Image (cartoon, rainbow, N blue to C red):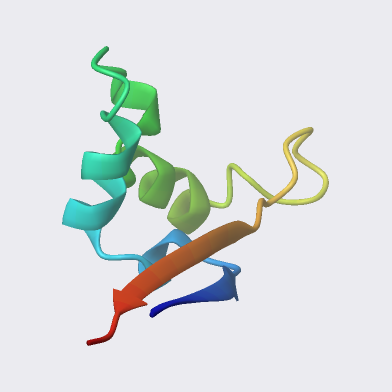
Length: 68
């Protein structure tokens, strides 16, 4: 049996950098603007916030576990 859980996350800090970067590069093409470090820098600097023209974003993390 497979169980899937989903979690709504409001900050990139709540996602492991290695997991995010692996998922972001899954399409094969490298894009530095999708890297965890870049998105974290946007959040931390306040560049992505109301009043800047870019609103914060929400992430959805899904996790599957397979039982016996």
